[in-house]
Image (spheres, rainbow over the protein chains, first blue to last red):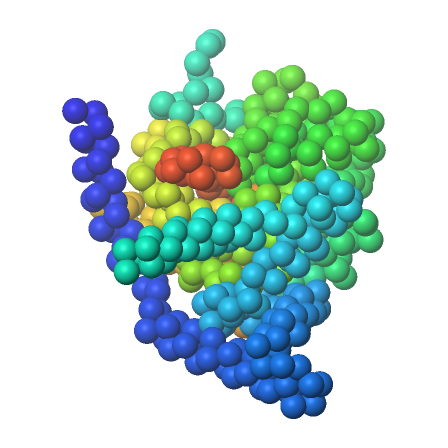
Length: 154
Length: 344
């Protein structure tokens, strides 16, 4: 009974609060994420072509230096203190590509430098990225399993 | 004579001429470029304030605010009987480490961002009750230490919603005693913890608004006062989202708050400074009240003000475990006597 009354109060309050909460700009944010995310991919493609044509990388190997370059740029911008401002504007457009992953590691490392290299930087670097690695690996395993099993049936 | 200083359910009436002897506010660079830049006693050029870490910087700001307030009253730390302080960091480290420096007998208090008025109300009780002659109350918060503890690394590029708030970097201290011609501390209303199910730590304004509304209502019920009795009623850090919610809740309860209802979180930064919904943190209500409001009272801009500091009592563990954010608000009423003008 008490729980029920609390729930009713919460719902009534939610109605009042929602009137005053700014609406998230879903369409604008999606559009920005699409354009910025696309531009990051264009930059990646340009880097890849550069590595193939000017540095003699084989096309199937050129992905590695490309990702490394994007990670470097992302970490540099994080260290210079501008990545968070661009990220606030660009949203998922920067968060989804490898740039977001690099930023999450670099920013955690910077943040915990004050607690020393081992416990601070080492212990906290993967604070945010850890979840991405764990579930990335897990989903890769599951997809791999499905792929193998469907292959056996065929 | 027991109970005579408790009026109504939860309001203390201070009858023994408890006064603000002095107050001081120290702030970070961003606050120093904001709307109240003229009101602060010290503005640090960067977020480190000459220290090695942000945590040490926050402590330094608190230490400086406390010693400036004592100095302004023409006293020395030895003449202060008790030091009441709190902050947002785990185990209240800014407050207790600063008490190690100034060596004043120390009482650590915690009420999240409501700590400013919580510590001040308790200081007034000690002075009014004759348990102390001079008590100083102080709080601090720092944008980077708060982000680090409660949210994400400061350089992390995740997008924040419009309802998020910006933790104020700075510290405020207020010295109470029984002499002088400063503002009188008249009432303090102690809040109850409220919880209306808001779980989003990026939306503290709507989590805390019901606590503010409840304490304001309790204050009116206990004292028999109404919104018109105050020249200004300010909440601590409800900001753009929470203030209109509190206004509506109070309207539904029969109180028309009018033009003189404001929020400290909306008074510090300019429109251009990107702070989402507005300022927050212990220092938010403290630097506005101790730096700006009390000073303006002494210049006779306002006769009576009510400061309602709001606090969100969450921890990173509680919200990760899916619990809602319990909130509290404490109110303190300041008054200038008729025909007197204090020294600003």
